[in-house]
Amino acid sequence: EAECTVFTFGAVISACEKGCEWEKALELFGSMTQSKLESNTITYNAAISACERGGAFGTALTLYGAMIQSSSPSDIITFDAAIRACEKSRKWEEALQLVSAVTLATWTNLA
Image (tube, rainbow, N blue to C red):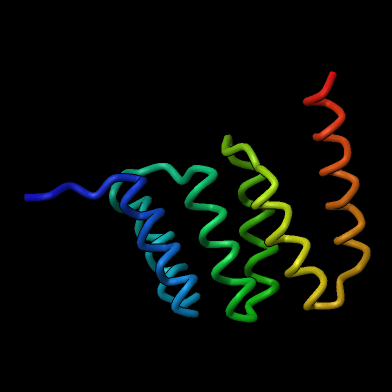
């Protein structure tokens, strides 16, 4: 019997994003905990992108907030999807906060 890994979930969630199946992507993302797997940057990014692409902007931003509270580090893909969700939901103030966070993260990594 094949065992699902966090990489398997990441790939399938990403496929759901590309197929505009954000609800299925969220279902799979949520089922990771039932499989005793911890979400990582790749699975968070795939789920956030799926929600953003599917028009579930509030859910994308909620996932971004959950990611920040978890131990999963964010990256440029995370920020891009979250900023696009802000743009499409007309949450310009949150978008500016994200841009500030990206700028701070960039300068911190350069130091």
